[in-house]
Image 1 (cartoon, rainbow over the protein chains, first blue to last red):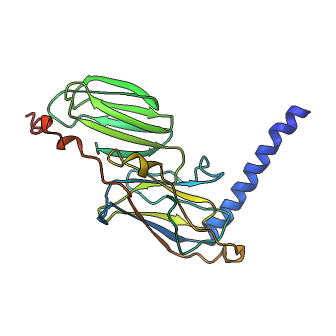
Image 2: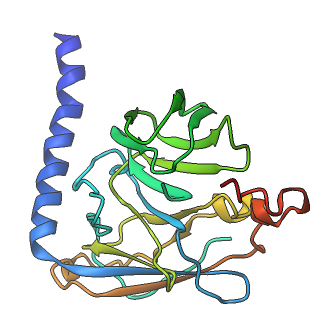
Image 3: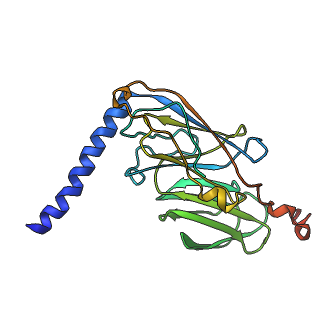
Length: 87
Length: 158
């Protein structure tokens, strides 16, 4: 019994997380644009940009295709319009 | 094949030889160790990248040929276009950090995570707002392989 309860808890969390993600995906469709510049403020192409989301980094939502650089990102918090850089 | 290719973990990458010369692709990287023996244009090989990480590729015949495959853990990745822009669908900002990678980035810039500012009000969740983020490197780009004097002109192998 103890072993069963240990395995059930994370599964419940995953289901709840998936439901929350589905709701958020339908409720918002804004874009996040990341502009990468070098030290002299020139744009840099071909830089890999990955979003690291706490608790979601291993939960794929969409699969990147060869001709599609648009990937999905959702979270459980409201969007913001500003950004800070962590040194 | 592009110099830097980003794929999701579990992706198979095709290695066609579109040149009129032989190649021998290999990698000793921890994320994926493999080799494709000497092959020509008509032979196509798929390699599965099942582990996240950086895979450095080389050609045993042409030492100056280098490539990298960034194998991402999740689907939340892309590569910047010629204007330096990367675009994501976006529905929130909970503990989202931005990670950059390129072989010419200094390790300080690769390891720095740029974080979105979080809002305290959960009631705005349905109001999607377009967000623009500018990330400026703190270090100069590392020199490209072709910038080393001892390999100038080596790429003309026809």
